[in-house]
Length: 229
Image 1 (cartoon, rainbow, N blue to C red):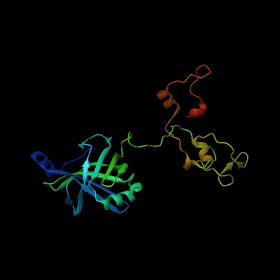
Image 2: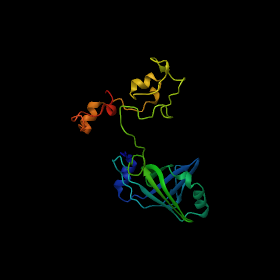
Image 3: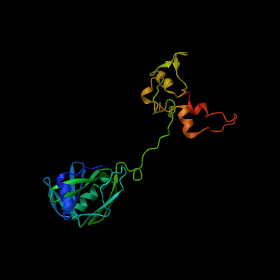
Image 4: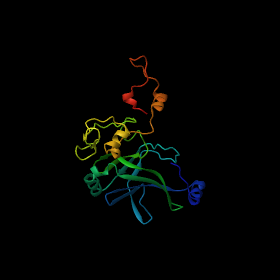
């Protein structure tokens, strides 16, 4: 992530002897947790001296952030019990790691992501932080691209209801089938549920996937897959 350093921070870095500490902040519900390598106060907030970073953090212009391992060492029994009680709520919570330049009294965000894995014992907690844009550290739903609807007609995703949604004007009875293109979805009053990609056309699919062989002398991709686009 691109970052702009203030003049004060740039001056502190140029001095070569600046002292820094890292700050870890996250909230569970409305309860704040703030830790640092040394006990410090910043912007009126107290950071407890339990933080150890096992992963080096550097300024980066890359979109993908590597996971960060943060250890909270020598935590009190009371803090360990609080974290243990809220362990299930910790996963997915947003966490921020900052570098505080003490001479400049200014902090720069190095990492903003979410808490992934959590490991706890009586006096130590290990948190794995994953970046929001890291596709290797997060599971994302997979969706097949198509210019057609992928739902089963009248299932919960489609939502078509006999007698409630529009009838077939030719039979004046509820629709029994659906060709799954957008026009058909509109005719059935389900256009707000249409999951297809209207910008994917037959020509676009062929240009990416190439001509698929079929039993009918290499005829182009099956019309039932590509629709009439």
